[in-house]
Length: 311
Image 1 (cartoon, rainbow, N blue to C red):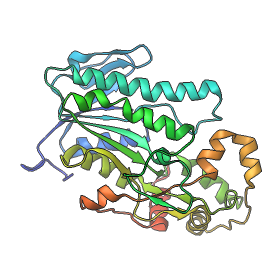
Image 2 (tube, one colour):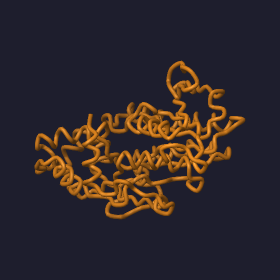
Image 3 (cartoon, rainbow, N blue to C red):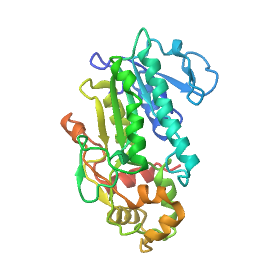
Image 4 (tube, one colour):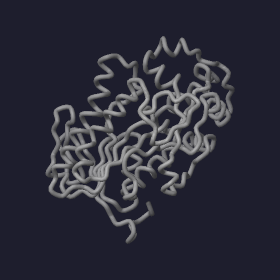
């Protein structure tokens, strides 16, 4: 988006869930800087016109205050990497994404003045472990808990699409940000010289710089040609070994301590197998076709920029 609205990008009113998170806080700031009005979905009593009350656990949303918004970005959901995927944790992950998305989609479809677009977040975990095979948005769902979750997560938005709302599923890769996410965990370890490849190091990592991810969400709001799944990744995936070398180089530290696969499986169970030892080589075909331009398309500059912004 341009710094200020122009006739081609009119001022919009955008409702955002998950607005206090890593992606949501940066997206809201970008939208407001561009002159758009942001209305945050909050799990408490709303304060003023800038907030919309909802509680997805109880199936409650203030539909009246949703009337008239131009677009919705749905980012809310429990953190996938916060701990082992116990049966209880998997239920929490499922409910926070599937039930929350379904509530929002049904509510939007029932409005008298519907938004023109609903942009929901998803994940490249949809594709499962792709090995050395590259996949784009036309690839079928893979296997595993995360793939099944992503399929249900995206399907939960179907009422909005059937209601005539353009619906986009942004399948995000590994987000590079100094303020949070995986780098907040990895950088201190690597600074101590304790970093290294995970398992074989051959598994593919499809990543995206936070600044580019925010721009992708903006593009999905604006571009009426984008609908359905959109892979939000940089143009080139890296192996875990390549990612490790790049991070170590940016931090000027060695990265020689390989973490064996058995230790990851023992410590993190299913989360470790699916999120750390499997990989996805994902192609952003729809963004390329739309002419999207990445500001940070190469891994090492993206890591350096992310770490420069560390708190």
